Length: 545
Image 1 (cartoon, rainbow, N blue to C red):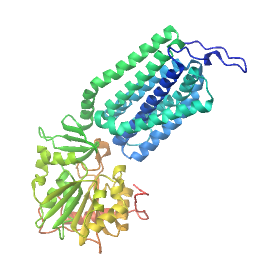
Image 2 (spheres, rainbow, N blue to C red):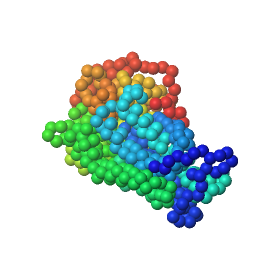
Image 3 (cartoon, rainbow, N blue to C red):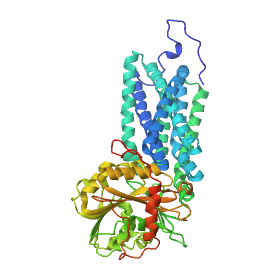
Image 4 (spheres, helix red, strand yellow):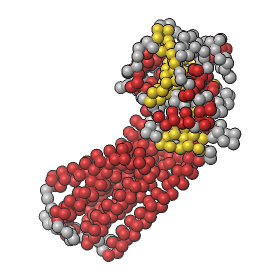
């Protein structure tokens, strides 16, 4: 590597800050440095967004994950920028090593995080838990490396042609911010849909490595000793070999990680425009499992417990026209169609692929009773909130909100006062709404916030819960793939305009496997015993889950 120079006398220019011995014109060299700034900034933002996206998928609560990752990274960028001041005297060599390290750390971060999640399990608990510490560690490392780029690139620009500091900063940050814009748009619209998170991160690391190495070895190679050039080249080739090997093995890695998370019987695994969808089981006696973004939404072993409790209390009364929000798996619609007198069922599901599987996957279609072949069932592929804004008023006798847990940030707007106001508008005068409101035992504040929010929207409520610590069931729409996070119950809120609805079952309705009138009454009392008073309603601008 280049040996450090002695300090220059005061008032003179240090010898290492003089013009670089470029192999081409200064104007062309300056353009190439700014182009490298553009590419490196794009790669840096992709690393940040990839960590946010993966943490949101694995942990949930996108607001918290984005806040943690981005704040830690910005802090680390300041540390990296300060640390890079000591490397200005060998800016070219330092920048080459920096980019190789950034390509390795950023490119492999997604695989490392997913591997820890897959083979260690639960991400819950304190921030001191291993996987969460790894997330913070990657955010710190990538932030330090990104922050160290700026002083070194500034020095390299000045080596080509000295100019006033303000002009150099303006040029550097213009290229940096435009590159960040391109990286920010490329991640959701190009890398994620075409390559996925793992391959996309590896590809980004490879681009980062090639650009950084080419700039240093091609443009500033004369600033390095012969030994330094060979060491940097060997290091870049080693990093490239790691990234290329990981890219070749990424499919095998994903299969092994899925098996570690979901078990050995994964039949379908696909990334839709909305979420990751995984189907397991229904072979060799294993029950079917439907996972959405790593959370178990359906278990063939006991899904009837959840769907009977969700649907049948709301169907005790007029039920000719029924609206199901979510529930693309068709299981809520199956329970609705068991009641006589149902003339129309409208299902509003966001993910078209879930609907396709519910229609055509043999195991899932068999479980839902092939409901999508019934002419009374009509499907809309849309966001439930936006669909309700154009829905006809006073139309439905029953509205069933079969939606993900309110603790998931993406679902928060579907548990807001505004959302329930739109639902109320679609209900007939004697209509009823039932809401899946998350577990009561493990997250009582969330459950009672849902109840408060529904009540604030002008509906009278009757909360209830099913299941219990000794119930033995193992699945439900709140569950993660890790059994350690399984709640012990499901909470529901039955609501109606006007007077408070009664928790009762239609005695003339279909037979149920486990739900009884006595049990439902006890479920209502059990929920009431856990009531938390003084909670505020959740709104779009003030979410409280």
